[in-house]
Length: 331
Ligand SMILES: Nc1ncnc2c1ncn2[C@@H]1O[C@H](COP(=O)(O)OP(=O)(O)OP(=O)(O)O)[C@@H](O)[C@H]1O
Image (tube, rainbow, N blue to C red; front, side, top):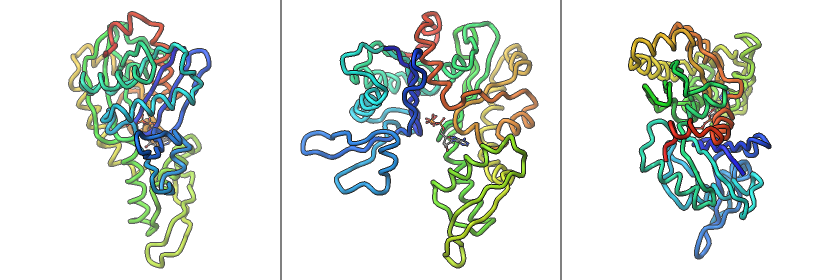
């Protein structure tokens, strides 16, 4: 079995070149703390549904923190449970490419590869999320022309420029979709005197993004608690207002992109100015994101067709591209 794995801080996506996307759920698992070793009770969406209502003795754990594995045993248990849910039997020989962040260290990559090997995957190759996403969108990272891609995840945004088998420049901002959620909640509190929880703020942010094609003033109905009376209340907020609320976070991403562009040699910059940049990851779906980048940077910005799954799809496709893995593989 061949698999491409995008093990993100927020979501895990697994792609099988023959069957398509076989797992696409939140990166969380619920464990029962047994006398000897922890037992996996639920993984992905089922585990996320238990958050905040798990009985005592159950603990929710995430396999990654800030994009890297911090506990080998947790990562191994998690990957094994995900593979089982993805339809892999314990005896099925499985090889995989797993996405990693561009600024992860060799030690951090080694930890992820080891966890995957212990979960029964062999061989495992780590590949930059940016390169995998580019492959998933049909770009060829081995050609001589420089491509630049931007992956906006939950807690980080990464800009990477590459060509001919090597990375020319990469920059990371420690902000992403989760900071946009926080910005939406703060905006509603300050401008509409409406207190909303994190889940409602995220729902509203996603809904506003989904209406992006329907015009700037498509309103979104928000449910919260009135800041003065404390009673439940609804508010109707135009999507454009929510785009304005997340603009400071988009500004942080923009500064990172500008720095990455500044790092490029003149001919590389010329390639990017002519071709534009490709954006993907959940955070890139927020209302007005690609338009704002295009306006501020003055170059074409293209949103991936499948921004949430292109990294896993590209990783799966890369498995059959030996020259690509030889050039960009990281462990
Ligand atoms: N349609 C949408 N509109 C706006 N934001 C969205 C949408 N879908 C997902 N997001 C946001 O995208 C973020 C998660 O993105 P993604 O799944 O790419 O992250 P990840 O790869 O797991 O994280 P990381 O790259 O930080 O490890 C969350 O903040 C989520 O709220």
